[in-house]
Length: 85
Image (tube, rainbow, N blue to C red; front, side, top):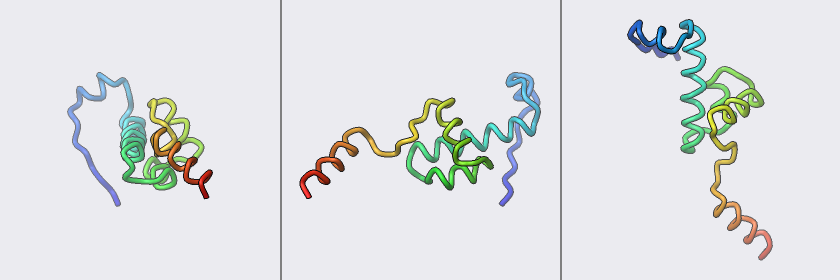
């Protein structure tokens, strides 16, 4: 699928990016956000961003998004359930 976004020329001047680089950054940022809120998996997010999964993990780090989708409380609860079984 192809999505087009119209941006004012000033956008490129303010971001100091070429259009292809900006498009790549927008894809990565959208994928990271959708991953962060739990809408997509890492695999799907990396496909949206057009990069490998390991490269996507680097993007998450750069954008300060946790690579873990569960909260600390959820992780502790999962661990507790495993201990009880």
